Length: 172
Image (cartoon, helix red, strand yellow):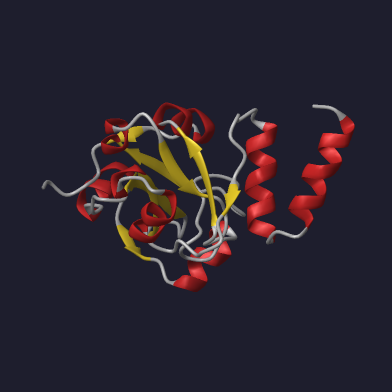
């Protein structure tokens, strides 16, 4: 990238929230080809994000955080926006789980609920990707703020996060 373009990118990002900047920086460092987009409207839910982007709700990579009971580590499950996480299936993979309140999510990830990105967490999280995301060629994930999203494929999500793929949703 040339220096004038870098200056423009830096100037745009400086006005964005810290979480969005952190995700943008990590995606750039990992060579991801799609920069995050800052929407004019908040997309705190999968449906809001799908509506704002004009995509199917299933194409939204929903981030759900749990608290692992054994060591108080955050467990992030990234699944399709049209699916519900099966806590028992997740627990069978990572150990017994508890609920994570907003303060826990913010402390462990550095993001507020509704903007939890699948990467660039404040503290290392155990991450699982649900195989249902692989129904789509293109998905969208939160970029560290309720207004921030970025485009990628399910395979890119697995590569960027290093997370394993499992069946961790309720059967429909």
